[in-house]
Structures are given as structure tokens and as C-alpha cells.
Amino acid sequence: MSFNLYDLPHQLPPEELFSDLIPDAGVKIERIVSSGQSTPEGEWYDQDRDEWVALIQGEAVLQYADNSLLALNAGDHVLIPAHTRHRVASTSAEPPCVWLAVHGTLT
Image 1 (cartoon, rainbow, N blue to C red):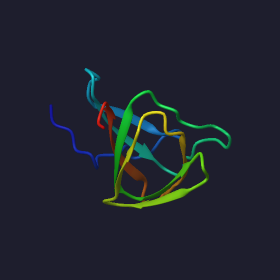
Image 2: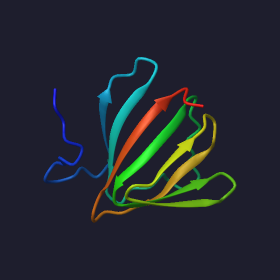
Image 3: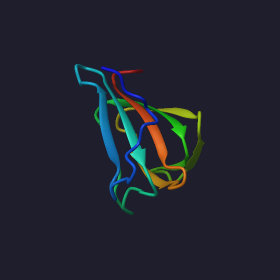
Image 4: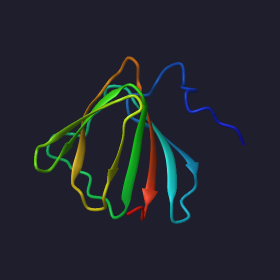
């Protein structure tokens, strides 16, 4: 099955769009499309597995529990170790953010 990471719906939904590229068999690979969404204030991701994310389009800012910020531009990537509390502080709407995320034991 062929899939182009840049093929987006003509009208994006109000919530982030998640598409599994490789089903979860110990490692999960997904495309995430964000168009202005952010993690609600006071909410944090605290995942059981490592997550490597690459931003392949758009701009975004990640925030960590120590309040440090990481600005990402197209082409940037980051490894977020398991149980590292983080949130998406902001994402661009134009262009929308296209993320490639890999979840698993990566470290």
C-alpha cells in the first residue's frame, strides 16, 4: 500500500489527525497532522515508551515539565525518552504541521 505523507484532506478536522503507517508490533510509526492545535494547559504527555518525532512540515513548540521550550522547524527531530513529561505548546496552521512519530524502546 502506498501513502504520501503530504497528502492531506482538503479540509482538516478541528482535532489533530493521526494515521498509523506501521501497525504497533512493538514499534509504532504514525503520521500526525496538526493545524494550530496544542495540548490543553495543565495536561502533559507521560508515555510508557520512547518517542522520536520529526517535523517534516510547519513549525511547532514543545514544552517540557521544567518549562523549557523546544522550537521545531521543518526537518527538525527530537527523541523524547519514556516518562519525559511534555506537551505541544503550539503548532502552525498554515502550513499545517506534518509529524512523523516512532514509538517504542528506542534508547
